[in-house]
Every structure is written in C-alpha cells, then in structure tokens.
Image (cartoon, rainbow, N blue to C red):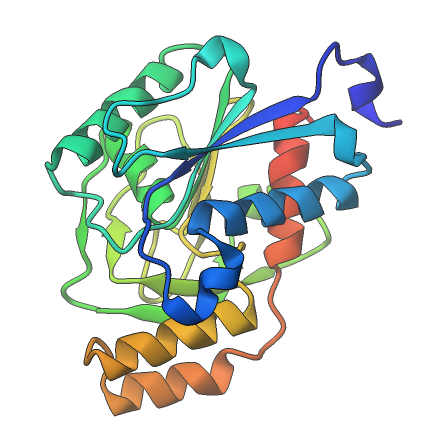
Length: 257
C-alpha cells in the first residue's frame, strides 16, 4: 500500500545546494540541486508515489549564507555534493554544519547526504573529515562492498552497490551510534545510517554517465586529473550503476519503509 495515502500533506524535501559551479556543458540541468531533485522524483516514482505526493524545494546555501528551511515546513533535508572542502571553516560551511546539528537535535525531520553532504553530516556528528592524502581521488563507477546493515538497507539482494564517485575528501571514521553501510579500498566510510534519522552515501547516485563524463573531461582539461586517472575513469564511466535504487531507498527511508 502507498503509505502517503495516510499523509496529511505531500512528502516535503528541502534540497540544500552546496555548489553553484556547474560545467557549461551541463547547464541544461540548471544546478546540482536540480539534478538531485530529479533523482528524488524518479526514486519517488519507483517507490510508488505520484507527482503530487512529493514536494521539493531548492535552497542555495553557498551564496545565501545562513538561509535554511524552517524545519516545521519539511519532512527531510537533502545535502548535495560539492567541489568545496567539507572541512573548511568558511562562513557558509560553518553555518551549514550548525544547521545540520540543529536537524540532528530533533527527531522528526530526517537527513540525507551525498558526497560532500555525507561528509558534512559526518562532521556535524563529530567525525573527522579531510583529504584522503594516502589514497587520493576515487572516481567513476565504483563497487562498494556492503556490510550486513548495508545489504538490509538497500535490499534488492545486493552484496555490492555500484555507484558513481567523484571525491578526494572522506569521513575518516564512523560517528558513535551510526550503522556502517559499506566500504571500498580507497574509502572505508562509504555510507552511514541511523534508523529513522540519517542516511548518507559517499558516492553520487544523482549523477548519470553523461554528467560524470563531462565533469571528468573538464577536470582533465583543468589539470585536476592526469591522463592515467582520466583514462582509467573513462573506461568505467559507462558501467551499470545503482543510482536509481539509491534514490528509491532514500524516498522509502523518508517514508519509514
């Protein structure tokens, strides 16, 4: 049964856009927040919801420092990825961490984070975040080895979750009371889960092959990636990945399914 039939209002999700610098070739997608909105919309459809069951609002937390949704008006808060450092002490980053701690201090509104958002939530919960100096960048479609908790969360009988990656910063350890969802050789903290409260993934379930291909191309041209990393990443960018499953499970998490 569709659980939203018993709801008095749509499922209200505030997406906090943490990066405004989308590559020119991807401007048709408008913003990273809009890309995340598409993931949630497709995930909601897969979860059996109709368009009217979902209400998404987009928030610019980079340029509109300190401007956040009223928690009374939302059911979930989604933090996007970002090229910025999750360990920075810039005004907008500090304000974002403080807001996340505010969300964590109550028990109704749930938190979802991807990549940078995953790291910010980890930081807000007391974990160390920073550069993965010893192992470097993790990019393109990557297999995440799921823990027992990860297999239970993502369901679908999966031992491994394939997800697009684009990061060199990590959460170094799990905060107290958090379930471990999975790991890779480059990053041990690939996902965090607190039932009814928080779910995060280090990867980018919202990205498509086209989106990641363009980001890889731009960063290669900028010299961020050398030829070897770029070519190896491009060889995997078209592999099957589980972004839509993650989007569906995000929605079902918000619905307590």
